[in-house]
Image (cartoon, rainbow, N blue to C red; front, side, top):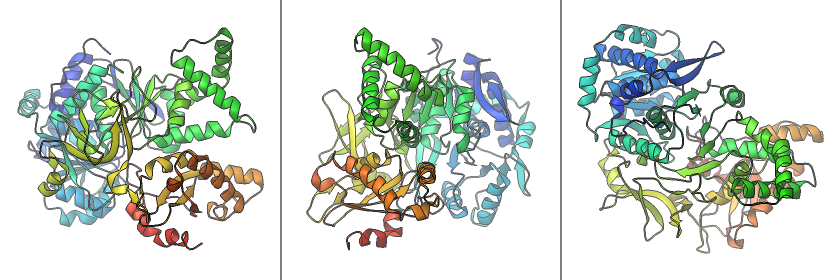
Length: 589
């Protein structure tokens, strides 16, 4: 990290200006324009942020006002986000996949006065519910033109040349405990709640990034995670703090691998599904009968990468495996990855071991929207596969009597917006957040999550089961996209499974089988593939915890059908409700 790192005491209202003064002509952003990669330096970033901030002020934006941003991850999201903060306002990210009714709830509950939309389709979505949003005064659009919406380019042009002293005055008036963002939870149950995150909380996150010194000037962080999610928001703040460059994905998830090859990032924040898919593809390339050789290669890679002394013969064997297999894995990520961070959901230890052996260390971490995405993290030289790491600086983590993980620190939310009762429900009398996760802390301080408190399954025999780990093991299967365990008040656990079309369809073609996923879900040959991997997963668990029966669904779970949150977490209650009959039939056979 640069020796001239910023002081993390500054608020998000001051951050862009201070970064521009410190990092100047260093690249702050890389993004695609007309098929080419363009860049913004830190000075250019601040110039554009100032112009947009002044443009918003010209529209009547007052300190403390809420500004909604309905957009995919792109550089303009960052520009608006930082501009609103610089003007003393509060940013309210809105998932671009949200329905009109969901947008109405988020913008209406937060009382947003301005909303910035990515496309004219998003503007249309807002127009559907505009009559129910009395606080909303202006709609701004990034791409295209729409009646009643101001182009962002016009807002920026109108604000160019504004008085810097006016912004400085607003920034100086921001208090550390003022709201910075209101991020609405994904709503796995009930209506989303607005989590109020403060400037102090983000300062705590940036302080942790500074102290860990994992990346800094010259590093490139590839960002495809939704900026409507707290994980990406923290990554964005950390990058600006330490002077790294954010490389924004182009908006098409099918092009992520191609973009990784183009930008060659050094840091990759991600969710487990990306690593699970790469692992699945890599394992599918192991020839029949070569499983033990592959396992031996991974074991040797773990020893060498972990610094263990090996013989000359073993070193030569590692060099061969590294050039023939592991180099291909590194190449998928652009060839320059120093490390990746996996968060938002559990990831299997075997997958972490594989990538570590391949020279792409993936460090699992944990945080929540309510903790400004800060909590625990595995680090180089301080990691344990299968854990979520140790608490980061400033995070006080403890285990309650019932096993629930509780956490305190400056990064904890101010509360839920307009919902004092919900806030009181999750806070202990001595100021710890009840996280809802069940876990433990070992003698070395590493935290392990065993499940979600609300997801615990209690069988008819009274056995408490936490489905997340076994479901995660099943998702390692080449053929499985999603697995949902069920068994509350039932004699044994069962599961519904969806197929990974990217893997099962090519296999079916090779076997001369139908290529329609719904048809394949009915085939005995496919069921045998899944059964073999289920048997392998089950053997790691006690008999009472093992999934006894399963059914394969004709389609995958989707955002559109409400079965996944915008951050791709499973809405377990929705799946249980939508497929109640399917679960019950598994107990009839």
